[in-house]
Amino acid sequence: MPKAPTRLLVIVNVYRPDLGGGVLFSDLCEGLSEREFEVTVKCAYSYYPEWKDKSGHNGWRIRTTVENGVTVERHGIYIPGNPNSLLQRLIYEASFYLSLRRRLPASNSFDAILVICPLVGAVAYATAAKRNTGAPLWLNVQDLSAQAAAAGGISKSGFLTRTMVHFQNRLFSKADKWSSISAPMVEVLEKIGDSIEHVELIPNWLHRSLAESIEALHDQPERERSDEVRLLYSGNIGTKQDLLSFCRHLHSTQANFHLRIHGDGGRAPELRSWIHGAHDQRIEIHGLSDEAGLARELFEADYYLITERTGVGNSFIPSKLIPGVSSGTPVLAICDGDSPLGDELNRFAFGPQFSWSNLEDVETVLSSEMVDSDDYKVWSANALSRSTYYSREQGIARCANLIRNMIEKH
Image 1 (cartoon, rainbow, N blue to C red):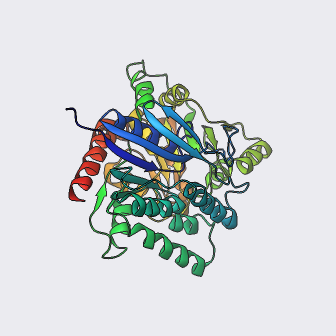
Image 2 (cartoon, helix red, strand yellow):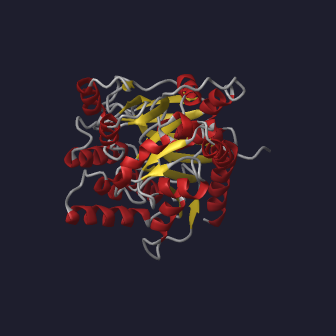
Image 3 (tube, rainbow, N blue to C red):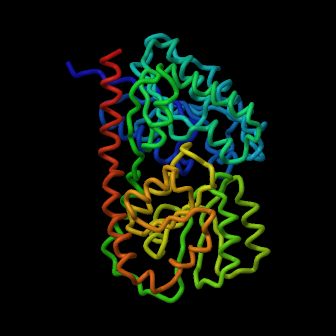
C-alpha cells in the first residue's frame, strides 16, 4: 500500500500573485507538493506590495481553489490605506487573525503546521490551530515585525515597541521548531529565552520561474559599456528601504549615472512625486516588472541597488538580494554594516557597501573606470559564487526534512 502523503497546513499572509515573499512561499508549497506533501495554504487575498485589493474579492467570503497541486484558502484582510500608520498596521495584523479564526482546523486534520511570519496575527492563529489539531508547529521567521516597526519608524513609542516585542516573543515560544533566513536573525531568536531551542538557518532561494528567466540570459553576449553607470532598483518601496533619501543624495551629485526603479509600496507615491518634481533625467521610476523584464534589466545594469534604512537591526534581510547575486550583477548596498545585508556584503564581497553616514563615498563606484576595473570583476565573480548558497532544490529539501523530523519527534 502506498504511503499516505504528509498533510501540511501553511499559514502566511501573502501568496501568488503577490510578489516578493508571495512568489517564494508559493514556490515552497508547490515544491513540497511535488515531494509527497498534501499542502493546504491559508492566506489573504492578494494585495502586496501595492497595498490594494488586486483580486477584487477581498471581504468576508472565504474562497478555496486548487493551484498547481496546492489547496489555497483565501481570507479577507484589512488593507491599510497608509501602511506607515501604526494604528492601521495593528488593525491589519488583528484583522488577519480574526478572519482566519472563522475557520479553525479540526482535531487530527493535519500532520504538521508551518506558519511564516512577518505577521504576528498569523502566528497567533497558528498556535490556536496547533491546539485544535494536536499537530507540531514550525515557525519560519522572515521578518521580526515588532522590531522592524520600530526600526522603520512606524512605532515611535518605546513602551509600545517593548509591549509588541514581548507579545511577539510569547507567541514565538509556542512553536515546536524554529527557523530563520540569516545568521543575525537566528542569533536574535536564540536569545529570546530558554523556551526557544536551536533555530535552523534556512535561507530563502531564487524561485523556479525567475531562476529560469535569469539562466536563459547567462550566455548572451556582454553588453557594451558606456560612460553612464547604470543602476537598477526593483521591489518594495517602503519605510524600511528609505529609497527616497538615497535618490535625494544621488540628485545632489554630479555623477554620470542612470537609476531605473521598478517598484511599488507604501512610500512609492511619495517617491514618484519627488522624482516628478526633481526633473532629474538620471532617475526614473516604473511599476513592478515581470520576471523576464527583471532578468533582462539585471543583465543590463552595472549595479543592483539595495537600500535599507539605518537602525533596521537584525529584523529582516531583503529577498531582492537573491536575484541580484544570481545574475552576477554586483550589489550596491546602502545599509548598516552590522545588518544581515551588511553582514552578507562584508563576508562575501559581491559589491560595494556604504553606510548612510558616508554617502559621499558612493561616487567612487559610480564611474566607468570602476566598472571596468579588476575589483568590479571580482565582485561579479563573487556574486555568482554566492548564488549557489541560495539553491532552490537545497532549500526545499531542507524544509521537507525539517517537517518530517519534527513529526517523528512529536
